[in-house]
Image 1: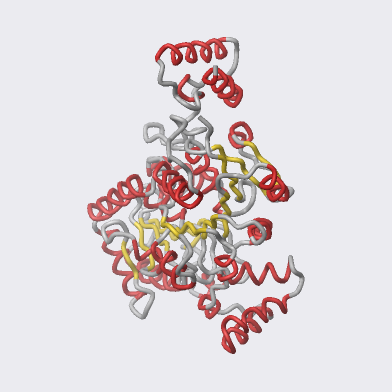
Image 2 (image 1 turned 60 degrees about the vertical axis):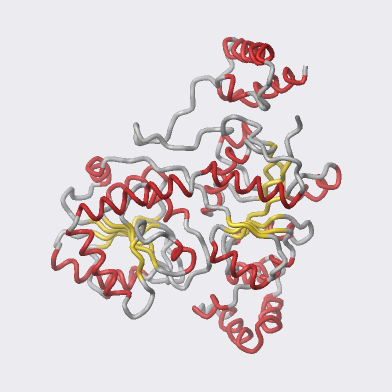
Length: 477
């Protein structure tokens, strides 16, 4: 049986994008349903050895030629509001495929693309005027002068991407509805964003590693720090809460936008001794900060239509979390996250929720437990991979959708028992390396014995690609 071949175009680490993590977590599961070739922007060298061992990786500039020589059964482009998607967008305009729209608002990306790739910012200005009229032209003039304004979120600039797409994958009903409003005949689907269920790490041990006081009330926000994260409203609540919890800590875990003076804001409110900014931290440290936090605040307004992987990791780790009741975040069930309206009541709601969760550990624990169960049920990686496969099959006319491989190409999930990422087995078992399970028990036994013999000769999990190839040849025989 020949697996459907798909071209998968995405940033991966070390490209600075949350979509890099997203793809590296999804790909081993998607690889159960199709033969995936990963296409990367020129100069991007993956630092994940599992990608190198398990997938064919090719430069993005060769995709059009490869498609002419041996057409793929599906092409997937990941597009987000970040410069790391520039090469992907350049190819997607010439070779239509399925666009995974991570952000409905691509305004900032399109401005950057005009200035740095087209090298003609007036193209952006003209597009804004033609598409959105006088108001769009006015906002464009502000933006090219670095006078960034919330009004930019009213002009998504995603219309060219939708016009060049053969289909769209969205991660929320919010984005799909907006896509359908702009292009009603474009095939689209909502596929839940998949994340590995984070480890459950002991709170006391995490605080000890981070040097945080064991008895303090700890609040934290995670992700890139910018003007849309509602931090000033949170800081005003922190000022009030500090009267009741003098040892309160508020931690900002993430990189800082150069266009937002968060340090100055903290200083003006006199919170230098209460608020800490960590900058970017690696995943194990991120997980420790999550475990050490009593209440997470994941607020943002206005929204670009994004679905936040960092939010899903907080919920999956069982942390009680506040979110803004807007965009995709408003789709969360009320028993999974505390919803904060981004209006005049915002500050009062933040304060009330924090007081409730701090004073009622039983309520906080129940909210966290329901959040973890929700992520495990609705946002697991296998469900996400199935959603991709079914949509690609419908759009490209695959004869069948089947899990051709019985296990993910590599392990990405965390184990609750150890609290840390699971280690791969010392050698792959036969089920891992067989691409298409044979129906004949005698053939299956022969293949298992052959694979085991190769392992005994010294092959390890690092030789999984070769083992799989041998198993496939045996299946053909």
